[in-house]
Length: 481
Image (cartoon, rainbow, N blue to C red; front, side):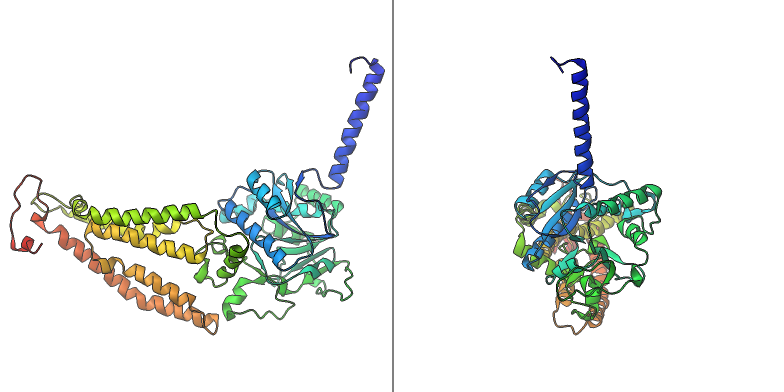
């Protein structure tokens, strides 16, 4: 430092270093080494969720977190809402959640997963779920309820804040589920868990659930949680009643909720990722999908997806219009213009192209629709898109319209069968869907056979498409056209 004696300069530098180390230690002790955005703590308790990047479905989980957190407001949860977000979550997402949703966002660095080698295939998406351990650093709160984004809250669950140091639900007979659990924040517990990660504590699944099962191996033997009527907090570890994590599959069997263990408060969807409730195809395939989308409709709306939806609808309208206007010219591109017959190989290739085109007409619209739109909107756009592309295939290959559209009609019928609201239970619904599919199969097969026969007939019309400038050979067959 200029102007100071060497001893004074060294002393000042040492003091500054000590202050920096002390501040860093204090931040670490409070678990706040990462920055916090949003409002300051306003309650003694908090509901916390987690978000990290690096999966093919980052945006879907972002929308899911926002819908779930807003649903807590609807059930009048008297607690802060906190999001533990990795540092690479987009800034505009963080801004929307803090300013529009009122969340308190704690931005953290991803914890290294030493069990990553145990995660295979599709389970790689669980690589960063150990970030849940940061919930123990939320020492501003007496109790925290940690929740996954695929939960739907049916009623207030603030009584969970009366539970002990760790409480979780067993939706599996032997292992508890970490889609919702209660904890008491503690930096000492957090440091102990980090030490366990370094030493390689046993982990049955390579993710957060297996690790926490290893931390609390005797939870199955603990008593069931019943909230004290006087509002006091319990100490120790407890099992939570099943009503706090009702697996959606329980609903599909009876088509109504009747879980006798505790209040029927929270629905969870611990299924394959493509069957989460926020996807537009989740209803009517899965009846509960509409419940999630109703909450999103009320809380967030679908403004983010509307530009893409309008563009797709306009594109399908253009396809239908251009196809009808260009039909005479398009057919000449598909068949031989010379009088000689096509070779067997060329005929086979044209038939294969027709089959691929029909399959694409029904599959392409499915993949271009934004995944998180409302199911009614999504299915409407899918059916319109499949109809537009089917018209294109019909006109290009001169196929019978009814045969090409048989699949379209079968899909409409299947949606009606699945959406029928008066089934007595899930077994009857499943049998009805199976019966419809069984009865539809012969019609679909017959339509495919007729399409191939029609295509073969068109390919054998020798003089139908003459070379430009050559006289057309009149035949009795061609006079029909």
